[in-house]
Amino acid sequence: MLTRIILDPDFAVHVKAVRIFVPAEREQTQSFAFQLGMISNALPKMTNLRKVHITMRWKDLQQILKMLHLNCPKLSALSIESTDGTGELVFPKFAHLKDFAFTTKGGETSHLDEFLQQIKTEVRALAVKHRSWSYPSPLISVRHLAHLDIGGIFEGDSFDQILSNGHQLETLRLSCELHCVASPAFRAHTKSLPFLRHFAIWVTEVVRDVKDTDLFPALTEFIRSRQPLRLLTIGCGNQYFDILGYNASTWGVFPSLQNLLGLITSLPSDMASPMIPLFSWMLPRNLQYLNLGNAFASCGVREFLTQFRPGVPPSLKVVGLYAYPPEEPLTTIVELGFPMVELLWMNYNYHTVVRRSTTGPNTSGPMELEEWSSKRTRYSRVDILTNMGVANSVWKDPFIGDFW
Image (cartoon, rainbow, N blue to C red):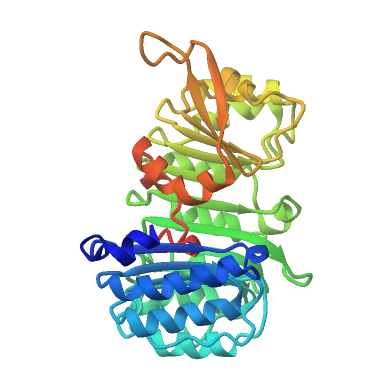
């Protein structure tokens, strides 16, 4: 592809988005140095390039960023994953940048902070995931954003700042290490964020001195009857169910979300086996994507699937389950619980449901599962989901260049 871009200017001008993935173990090889040279020759040819994603080590990221700054002044979307921390990574100024995403496992943040300060009134979509990065931050101007995705430490009045100032937000996605009591903010702002279409809050960790048993009751009131809502992620680690108030009543809000297409959540720990059929009937009837945690906590796989099946929306096309027992065939999920789905997401792998029939689609005919390769998952997921008609039912991932 790079060769054609270099040799064919008529083709190069049509390239508007590029993704560069370099696993860390390949970055020391001579072939990688050659590929960097190819990229430096190709970038000047792509005069209409607007969106770029890069995954590699920070030292090599620095080289690519310099090339982009020199050759792509009209770049509007930039997504970066640094595989070895931030190091001394310095971000050049991109005058037309509207979407920015950055993720890494750790490292010093001063250069990142400086860059966020430069772009805070210009970007419309911002995603930052960093283990030691905390919010609220003066580096983010929520009132200018339509899409906000943050993973890190939440403390002080962080939630109040977002809900008070995020009037234009269409997407709000929060992965929280909770250092504060959040429920009062959601109780005080039940009518905030009127344009919200995609909402996610997942609590990954709670510090020892925080106990907020009203958090999930407050969240259910915040999202209740929001008809514009299309995607919802709501939940926490099982160990935090009690201290954050995650229980069966949380599911009671789902029937009010009539236009919801995608849902990621967990079954509550207080759900007894006889209640399983009721929970499936609580799912919105237009749902196309369901990702469910804690499904097998109260009973075995076959018992759960059999009881959950009657209320599953017939519109469902994709289902995911965590902690699926390896001794149980994956086909059991389709046969007993979700005969209508076309795609499974199990234990972090995708599987296409292939039904063998000579007379057309037949949910009761012979069926097998085709597991995706890691390359297919990473590079082709968006295209496949689009062809299935469910691209609007799953979360975009700006951290791999799947921009809003």
